[in-house]
Image (cartoon, rainbow, N blue to C red):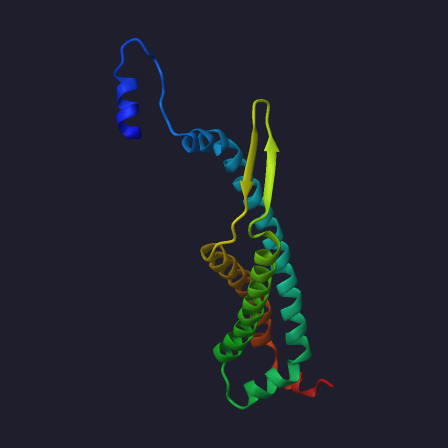
Length: 170
């Protein structure tokens, strides 16, 4: 029905109109603001992700420092550098996963269905936040990447520890 109405208006030589649904009109109006919010949100996510990586590095360096003797004992028993590195990285991934799940649950509880409005010169744009399963999965993957990046340097430090000197530490 709408397609026939649109066609009759567009083919009328006396009219010079653009015919679209109301939802399409408002989606076009909100496109610039949506792009702006996406860019600002991406920048904030990168900045906060960088901070989270430094937090993960600090946490994992502390974990390696506390377990220096245990790591040296594993190396003395015959565990190679790769298994020790993998164990540190796995710990960092588990911490990243737990942080991602906790953040996802918190985001869902606080922001799912949250409504906000923005004003520009000509109109008011209202939108609703939706925390979808795809966004939750993306957030958890982002947390895993941050955990992995935060575990690389401490893991490399763990595999470079001198075995004999580390076993003598008290």
